[in-house]
Image (cartoon, helix red, strand yellow):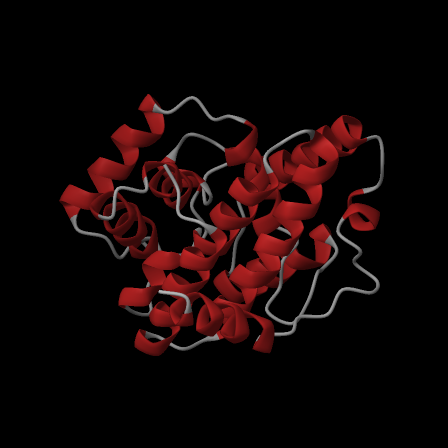
Length: 210
């Protein structure tokens, strides 16, 4: 279960009002990349877009590290969007171990254990892998080279799990083989520019149609 593109954009704009920040544009760029890669990979483009757009929706509730995972997971479950809840959980973990998380552990003991258990229970599929990859190439200003993006994260947090690093590179190779093309060509890295106004226009049209 996941919302329409219009509803997802509405949810993101509402979240931005609660907690403005670069994470919002990062989410939009992740959505663009996910939609484009899905188009060439035989995946559902709307589903990919929505999952990319809402993967960080837990940041609606504050400036968090690991806590944005548990908050997003619980929020999407409360709305009945189980597929999005899953991505809120898995997007930070291309390895199924919580110890690989890059950032501070600011969750309660209960939520930390919940994440740990749910990760072990989840068999990741191509949508999980897709959003993990797109998260690893989407900056806040534009699409980045995956190495540059990981180095940026490493510089901000002081470390980056080497297995997670290699898995991101493996995901890049996986989707390039699946598409039969370079990942940066697929997402139009050299020409894509973010236009936030388009999201407001879509939401206003959606609200006006109700």
